[in-house]
Length: 492
Image (cartoon, rainbow, N blue to C red; front, side, top):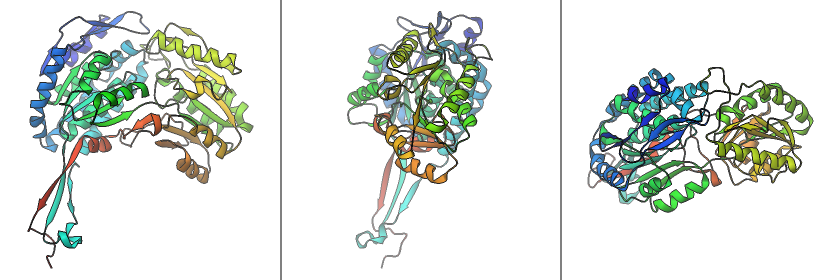
């Protein structure tokens, strides 16, 4: 089925993105066309879930959860390891699909598939580590003569709601960790990347994942809301905007939630930093995937004495990025997800310039392609500073001392991840302690992530951590066994 999904992309024909419900690939109902943002033509077609399909999926999940939970961890790990190999085998095909549906350059899509392979491999390793504890109950008088043990049991039915910006790897995280934990998973694909989502699900099925372990549904917010509110669902993992995350929480009610809700990431460049290196890193990581990443470099704070120097190197580095066709291997920056998104960022840039920011580079667009934009010293209360830009724009601002810039960075409703360039270990420790973020990258920009390291935020950036080990904790429940009158400890 993987090849069936990928093959049309090689010919230029629209890719069919069926749903996968109750063990069957289905293409029922009125198709929804996805127009590629760079191609400006239909590149894929999906089939939004009907109420009957949703009901069927929920019923199948309810009955199928027992079969998935019965699989030994070694069996689940073997399937995930095969999926890792298949992700490498189909790397170019899925990267091409991502380029067509989202305008992400091939080099970035291939990098995402490399991460998919890593994610499945890490999920497999973590599957083999799932266990429990022998509790020290005999340490208290009332516990003497007894034994208590725990193990991590599957939560049951998981719902994975994935975003468009990294549709393959974020699906790998959610679905891979859920299966590692022994759950059955309902996947609600992003409307912007239905075929990419179908390809990843097909890849896992080809690796041996049983039909009871996964179902794929397409559609918009109404489908997501129906799934969130379903009593059959035990745990929800969502990545997206704070506003949609709040809607997910309202619809979910009393369910376990893992929410990753975006950010307006800051990177701090201190006076003792290697300015040329810092500027090169920020140039590369500020415009990857046209800045459509929750940790993309958005705000760069440079110590005032090095501000002009940094800005000049950054301008030169960004100016050298190649903008164009995402299917061209040489392209660094493709298009944004759609023309409305690019127009919004263009508007925010114009507003900042009107209010006193200096346009250093870019500021123009062609359809959904926004040319990489640099703004110098925009007002602190402008949208490009306070909101999540999620586009090919970076704002550079001066600062005078560390305490001031930390306070400035913390004056945000977001707190996902930050970057810091300095040679001073004391500065690193202070920033790590005082910045209100889920993670700090020292001597790197905010836009750096290892898929086996805990990732997540504070404040409006959400809660919970997305890495296989931590996600397995969210996807499992602790079950306790009390053995009365049976003790592995002394009884006196």
